[in-house]
Image (tube, rainbow, N blue to C red):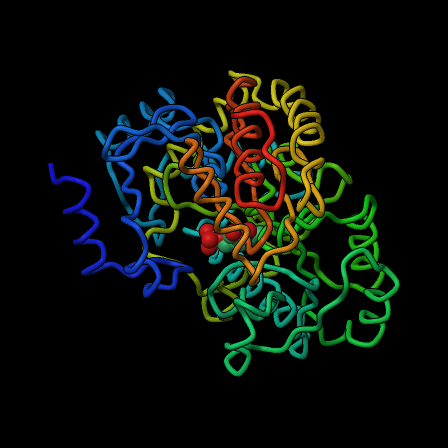
Length: 434
Ligand code: PLP
């Protein structure tokens, strides 16, 4: 096996990393090369262990190398690794669809697979538009989205995005959408009054806007959005790519406000964070709007090569089984409370911490006082790494999103490392060593 330096050099020769300024990447200290993982720990090629404080980009649920999920993927590998969903079907896809329909908000009954959160959103946007066309309404070409929204990086998803840093450059390539401030139902109603006739859907990240920096929505807002969509006859798409699969303390964020969207997007944690798989779920009326004879061309002409990949579906079925068998959501509740308490005691009190935002196992710690935007977040990340935790900021918001399976001891350690890392970068006094 090649050593760390050799791997790092080869990385810098050939790789192009996502959301990364390559000039800095190639100039910085040697990158961390992850070799293997176990539970909530990642290990680098030199054998150092790190707590996975952001669930490998918000997707790990039950820990790494969970025996049930490992076994499900291995067993599926002995049957078939990939077979298409175009014109054929297979048991893992069927079993997963059954399992999902049993747990999502009542009324969602159809599962369309794709392979990333972005594609789950593209599918939802295209379905919404085409459904209206097939209802005889060709003018429903617009969408309404929230300020600071993030729904992925493909062009449809970017069209309903509201994070200037990521999105504004691409405006000339995008379709038009109307943006509304979060939490202001009156403004949404005004938009709907003016534009409902040419709006296909309102799209929201329910309860928490993750990539915007873990921005929390006021209680009751999601329900108001649902009611306004109903009143103005516009579809509602809930993007639960980040909030779904237990992150907010319930299986789906929509369930906190008893909301069933017309289309629900899932990704990230669907396979326990093992393999790329996403799903867009629809209600029966949406699905029925696509039925007809082949020559009527009401078919949803969309599908990716790896749509519904059997290995990924097997991992997802096992992930849902583990939720039940290990009573993940029940055991999560005291951990959420512990997290709230320890953030209040150790982090919120630090100078330089502007705000601590938390919903379930989604945490954003906003820092203030850096020289340039994002510098504090970056420095805290590096300091945390030296102390044995992997975290990744969103600008100057330090994000904590550990696997739901994390032990109470490791959860406290993650908060302690975060606190002492914030202190180390010079905006706070040094608290007790982690
Ligand atoms: N939607 C939301 C709410 C997300 O947070 C993300 C990713 O962070 C996406 C969509 C895009 O998912 P992916 O990165 O799998 O394309």
